[in-house]
Length: 469
Image (cartoon, rainbow, N blue to C red; front, side, top):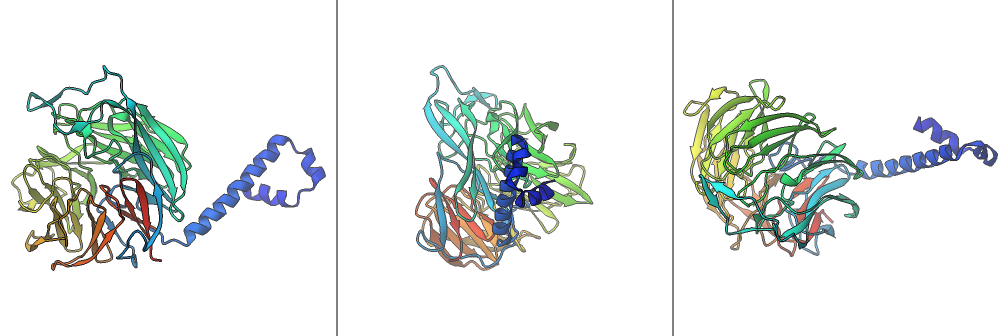
């Protein structure tokens, strides 16, 4: 309808236009504007390589980009295409689809009502208060933003939630820690107990869903939503595991499709999708248990003994294995052959294990033939992904640094960003070599992303777009 109608308006005479009703004329004008806008967007996008970053750690949740010829060096005055100030604070990774970027932020407001308190946390049957818990005494506004990838201009900003928050967060965390997910039509933001929200790409709210109120030891929500076909899946674990759930929602309507109870204590890990034995599996990391589910139904497929630590890291996938890791209080790496059934603990489904080198928050990365483990201080260990054989240990960055962001990989290189905002470019392979050190000039706790030929680095106050000059 749009094409023929617009074609007809080009030669419309004044006398003919006058005979049209005002509503039809306004409609045609809007259609013309829509078409012209679409042409501009398509033209801009056509000049970009077709590579999206639609969720936490990219297309398959592994932090790997297939793009080439990205800059390996940058500084505040070099290879920075633009920087855009962001409201409040957030640690969610920017995601990209076409010529748009989406991310979340938390804006702290005034004091919360004096009688508003955090839930009582129980750990091993005893009340527990984490010494670094903060946030409950303030009002908060949870923001969702869209930016133009080419210019950095803010396309729209929406407030998904505003008011008191259910629980504390860690002082180094954010109420905007989970990364968004998109299928190119709907963009979904997750704020833990403050809800799940679906927007269209123009910023119109399509739906919102209540995932329930669940305590996480006063440390905040860390897991990000995962997209499987038309389902948005969330690993919603809580303090003692009595009300832990795996939840699936229809991305188009926000309607809950299934939920599966889990007897797994608090976790902050994002699950991954694996293809094995001719089926799809959703593999979840956990303290007590590592469990695989059918992502279509939530039915459990197999389980094994967990990482016996705080489950924060995202599992790795490659070479017919799924590799689960943790770094505190126990350092653990467990390589599993998916495709099994029932309890696989102690069977040959466990390919290999390793007990050193992992950090607390940082997820490792599997790139090519090797798994790279990174400690909180940026010390790197390289293992053969198939066997667990150590290729090197003790690889270091040039200066002492602390890390919270997870590494990403592109074009034979690893990018590792410190809390100081320095990104170290490490040569991938069995020999450790630092190729470059790049700074954005401000602190950073968010994992970088790559979309349409650009590296996106989120600092404490700004989003930076890195592109070859």
